[in-house]
Length: 176
Image (tube, rainbow, N blue to C red; front, side, top):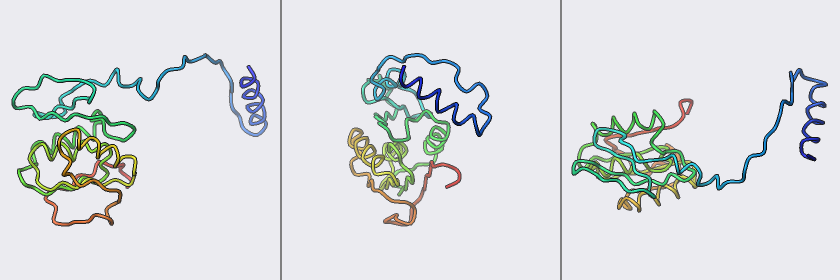
């Protein structure tokens, strides 16, 4: 009740300077939940491309012999595979990656695209992100998928440690 009174008072103060319309309409109590894990109940295994299946690390998937299964726990990093840009990249990689190719995943997030490349037969794979937390998640996901040899590190394009990539994938926001 105290928070509600503070909110109404602050809205009244703002209304002196701006048209806030109705301002306050109603409220409802939201039960406490484990929000960090609540989303997991709706995240299920799915086919992201012709050969590649994304399977949450806490689930099992009955794979066909031709399936490439990526076990994933995205944590708080971008890259569950459900976003259209990620699935589009995955579909393109499914057709473009050839054995032994050298690949850079710039803005790796959860590491999903780097792992897909490695599991499709790529040789050296570098996974780079500006977010240390994302790199920590990517390293864990690489280990989970027996892809610990993917070189994950914090940085941006100017910090890339190598050159001569066959494929560079950058699933990042458009203005960057």
